[in-house]
Image (cartoon, rainbow, N blue to C red):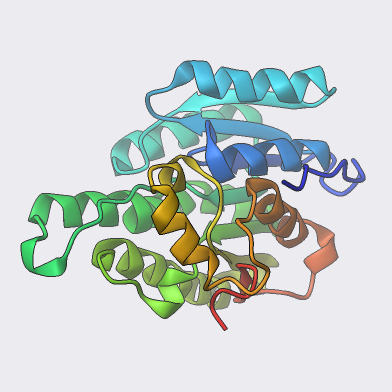
Length: 256
């Protein structure tokens, strides 16, 4: 798989980036890549403190700066209290990557209400309330970038993933609304829609399921978290200074 590039450290020098759900998968790759571009990274986690610290250790070993930060994006009060306390002491968060997400797959006719609520609370409500918690200092600073991690299935849909697809489609709508609302203060909001990426979620699929998915990917392979992280760094940095309200699809052609 593609390795995370060593970016020009001046790209995000002096900036603070928060990545939610950063202890594993795409979030982990994003945290490491943003640090490589010069940002101080806040590595959010809920339960796995050891994995979050491992990400921080990788970053600091490479000469970067990182801090683990525990809060559950599905609990708005916890999000607000944690982030307001941090920004009061340390200043504004300049880059937010709303990556935290879960899935509870199942056919719609037998789908449980608690599973629907859980997926929407983490994947969509969590992104909204995390952005809300950091936006005031960002507005005052008159600069910033928010990147929402959506999914190709938020565009195409997928049988057996109604809640996940609805949440990821909602993130695209949220991205456009936020982009229009905050553009006047030089805050850009974009989304990245990954395709089939090697993560803990996809590891649960058996080989037969993976082979079936590969037949739908023109590039003929699974993607890596690093390949998503590269798009995130682009959107977080001045390289994309005239890009807002967009959804960048990184899926090997899967959605064509």
